[in-house]
Image: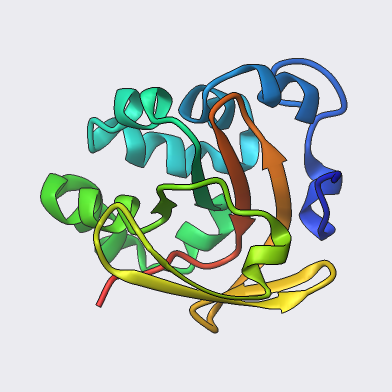
Amino acid sequence: DQPFGPACAGVPKEGAGSFDGMAKDPVATAASNNPALSTLVTAVKQAGLVDTLNNAENITVFAPTNDAFAKIPKADLDKVLADKATLTKILTYHVVGEKLTPKQLENGSFETLQKGMITTKGSGENYTVNDVSKVVCGNVKTANANVYIVDTVLMPK
């Protein structure tokens, strides 16, 4: 039941940003202690979703890395970050209202907080979301969420 995936190696071994540290904090706080998720944390703050995510119970967050956000052309990303409504739609599309286990991701379809659906597939330590985004560090526990760190930002239809 340990976190898995190639990007897990980059997670700090100790302190608030480590797996043990993240397990003690609600999800937005936990993410803020992980350097690879700093763009996501900035976006969550811009959208005013920190309390929403921290106060939610039993959620799953597909958390794009800084590299995932870097794939979006800077001008487009800046535009999205400045548009709270669009930003909120995109971010809530990364959140499912239940704690998903890796087993559930093998061939899953889940409604997001944004109300759109995401699909997951895979097995072992290899999972994709919507066929485009790879889970690079999965099954990370926080106080109120399971987190799957992904390499591509998911865009609602």
